[in-house]
Length: 168
Image (cartoon, rainbow, N blue to C red; front, side):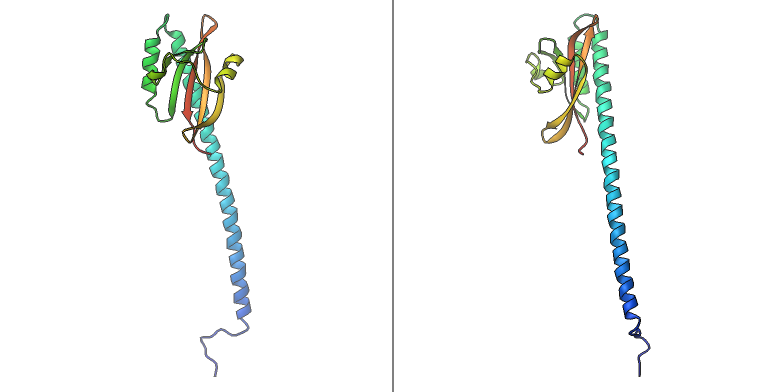
C-alpha cells in the first residue's frame, strides 16, 4: 500500500532540477546586483571627489579675492579669516605664501614665518596658475589646492588649501 503523502518517484528529478535552476538563477542575480552596487558606489565616490575639488577651488578663489580686495598689507584680517575657516571639518590646512616661499598667514599660526614645505608647491609656482594635487595625509586621502593671489596684475602670493576628500 502506497502512502499518499510521499511524492511519486517520477517527480523527484523534476524537483531536484527545479532547485538547481532556482539556485543558479539566484546566484546569477546576486552577482549582477553586486556588480551594479559596486558601480553605483564608484560613481557616488567619483561625484563626491569632484564636488570636494570644486568646493576647494571655490574656497581658494574666495580667499584669494578676499586677500586681493584688502587695502595694503592686511595680513591680520586674512590670518583671522583662515583661523575661522580652519574649523571646517574637511579643511585640514590653509596658508598664504609669499612669492619668496614664506608663510605669512595660516590656519595654524605656529607655521607663520617658516618656508613652505610641500612637494606640489614648486610645480604650482612655476605654472603661474592654480593646481590641484591628490595625496595622502595622516592615513586619509587629501587634495592640495594652490592658487595665485594677485595685486596690480602681478602674483603677490599664493593660497594653499589642503582638503580631506572622501575615500575611493
